[in-house]
Image (cartoon, rainbow, N blue to C red; front, side, top):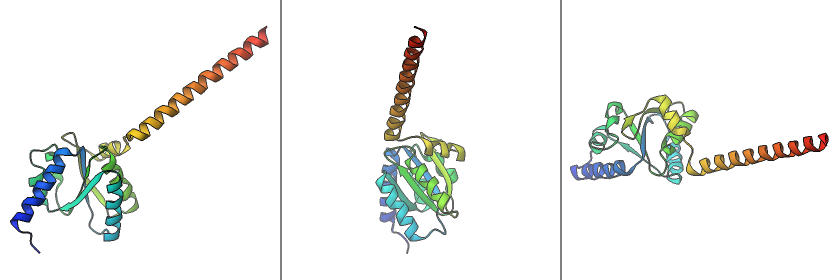
Length: 165
């Protein structure tokens, strides 16, 4: 069923608003993936602040015009499943990367961050960026390890001093 012009304008407007506020975007080809699997992916995405849509290529091209993600126009072809990361720049990339590991037919086709089209290796780097919570945990573990190391050094120094006296 064809969309009316008014519905198309609404879709373009909605995606344009999302594009202007999103931190990063990733696209994939989801042909051959079951509806239930896509629904589970969307459910996982909502939990971490990722907005996903399947959009016609011409509408998507119009929607991302004059946004940070205009560079993605080169990668838009075939069936386009798009995910916008709203809270953390790497959340969409991480979600799609993990999903593509479980589903061989799910292919990541492109991504953009800060107005730049990303290569596959850069997409993996984006996916590996720790969240705020993960970064705090790593910092605390590093501090804990350094404190433990200093304590061991102090105790060994005390032991050596007692042995020599």
